[in-house]
Length: 441
Image (cartoon, rainbow, N blue to C red; front, side, top):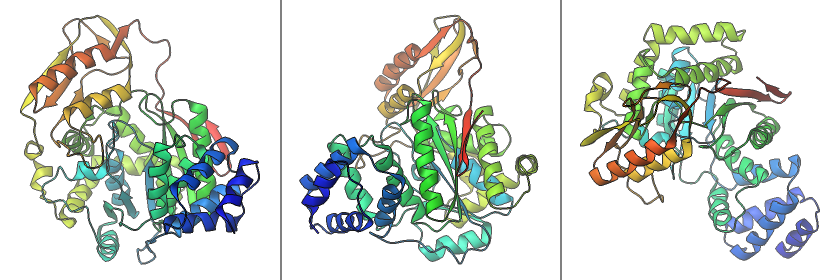
């Protein structure tokens, strides 16, 4: 078998066989095939696409390129959640404890943030002592004892994907649904959870900018998960504006804690309820959505979810004083307000640009080598459809560099589009994708 023939076949629109896919994944990962030939193959895939079988085979080959995590020793039906990335997306820190408090194991290996999207691990490291590096035994033992573990992925999970993504990033071949879906799902499926919910973001702050592309990605990922023998569903959710009110690591941890106490942003809490209800259904913990939602709401009222979060922090070495007193979390030296110069209603607030503002303040990474300022970020005071008067505070900028804080203040003021009230209220969730099809709301 020759890589030349594989490239030529795909260039000419032929299907890649399972053997051909295994061959190029294995040999590129091992350094036997040069970058320029895989670049040519990815460009052929970019233009001629891959069918469902090819995409599943590619995902399986990438999983087999490295380690897998056997979670069979964890009792019960293990659930996991993955977001395709957004701004202010703090759901894992709220959803995990809520689901775990219902007696369902919530097991998740996460990544770090890059660019304008935040990473769960970075947020958790705002808590003094919190250990994101766990051995497999620690991960399993914690899950059995308290029904929740959140940690970093092991170094050798899907090494093929790491090499492929770096190459795609510099060869303009990132935006292909099959390559995106296989990249995401290879990392999820290498970890042995039983059921997965995918939070597929769509809008200005998401990778997918329009609903049709988001649905196609969700369908592709659900097909892969189902084909791999895992219960997999997806919700299509709004990322035209940030989720919740906080953007930035320690600020988002504070918001998660407030939400677990019953005082969080309505959209953030509602999305956690919808995701959580689906996870309880997947785990067979409840018979219908109404029952699932009621049980989740009770975890907030009774403080069971909040107490579960404290358990999580304690079991992973964190100082629970930082949860009991959020004033101990990293705090910026400067907090300045963004005041409105206009009157009306917030018509839109571009999530991606808000994320870039937070990045300017140091809340995110330009590259994986960048150092994050855990205290920096933005707290929104007004969101889409809110009424605004002249002089009202639109947002607060948290920064350790006053010059950058003032720069971001002006950018944020211009990002708030204020005018007449929108004719239609914004949607939080656009639809559900399962192996049986698409249901739009």
